Image (tube, rainbow over the protein chains, first blue to last red):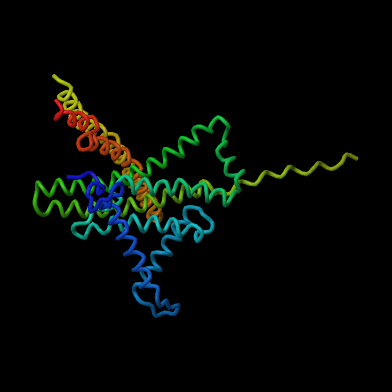
Length: 235
Length: 93
């Protein structure tokens, strides 16, 4: 049994390997893009809308609400990035219903790529909001001695994001593969349902953590306290 | 015992011990988290959505530790670099 879909190679030419991870990732992207294109061809603003448009509106407003609840003031700015993270990881896990499919997030390369996207996006959003000096000054808070610890925490939480998602997805598929060789019918189905649930929870966790990191980088500074007015001049 | 045997025995024993000891802490932690969440749900039922959401996020964070141990265990069993290196030397012997 293979540890990750990286090991299933469809075609190879020199250095480039077309493995199952790349194939399924592109397949997912194709399905998501084509599906959204088909649904949003004829949008209606009245009370009569197709159920697919309804579904998309529920998803978009739901994600907007979650982002606003975490504390980001203009959710629309971050909706593209965070919504894509959530939808990609959720769809990658949901498609395990299809037989013969291995989730691309079960490969450490995919999850590391997503975690690096978050690692790059947090300073970008922070600098866009606070300016370069303001964002870099955050690393010196609360004292200058905390600078190495802040940097280490940035790196370690990126690593934690990648390994958490990879571990959850990989363990789900591996448990299923092992069980299929031992007990035939009912137990693997129950584990497959559990795998779907954890996949959805992990998608939510990944995007909520990305939201929290971005909110931490862009939070409103407390305004400096205005000094008390001078006491009235002595007579 | 030659080096191949030592590597094999060490990998197998460590893989078992890693996942066995590594799941104790997170299991206890998750038990406490859910117990506290149930207490607060009983005290304030109208904050149920917030409590449930925070509970799930907290559980996923605690679960991460067990997942790290599981990943190490799987690497030792299925993608062990020391074993692969030693196995690759066998045809040459």
